[in-house]
Amino acid sequence: MSSQTFEEQLKSMYPNMTPEEIRQQKRAMETLSLFFLFFVVTFFLIINSVVSALSTTPDHKIKIVSMEFTAEPNNNKSSTHYLPLVGARWDLLIRVPGKLVGNDICLQGSLQSSFLYKNVTLATSSIHSYNELELGAPQLLTVSAVASGEDLSGAIGKEIMDTIKERNEVQFGSRLSLTDCREETEKGTVSYECDEAKLRSDHQGSDQIKATAFGDHPTCFIKE
Image 1 (cartoon, one colour):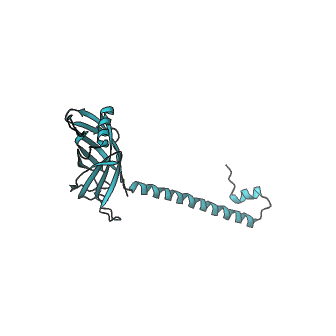
Image 2 (tube, one colour):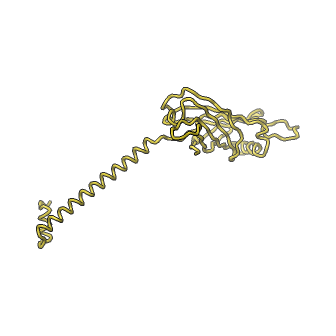
Image 3 (cartoon, rainbow, N blue to C red):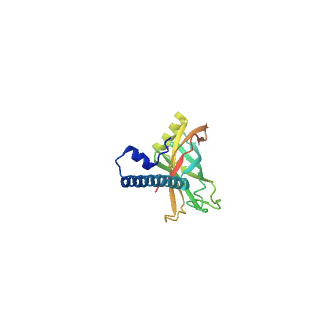
């Protein structure tokens, strides 16, 4: 390892360089080193700030823990007007992340849900009130909706029945509306649109058909 100083190295490389030129080269090298050090420190500070911001950003997604579908088929073969379903009911269980409780979602408020088949709304629940949620803790909320035979008397109701009978499965989409506590908004409610849930029929009796969600839990995203 060479023990030569910077000035000695320059002198050996450029014998004709004057002392003033050597001092100028040394100052330029020191300035460049300081600039490089400043760049490295700034880069890591920016990276650290971005990582910190991402880690503290609330997870606005809501998960559907379970969805159950119960249908009553029409077994009146003498009916002149065929109704594929007499009625149907959806029971939904959602999980609200702890980061949203008390910040985005009020500790006391209301929840409403709609259920869709191929983007057609089949049923909308009544407004379900909830209260005394635990601040900062994940919460489980339930809501149900019912559709009458008139709501399901068309081609969609028949297609749902045919799909269950042929594939033993059916898919439903859902939308949620919860009381909004975000300071930057004044809407009063925040809307979520959920991925479709895949339901598998585990009971097909003469009186009822039941299907329960399986596989990955669908995710609900804020719909601005």
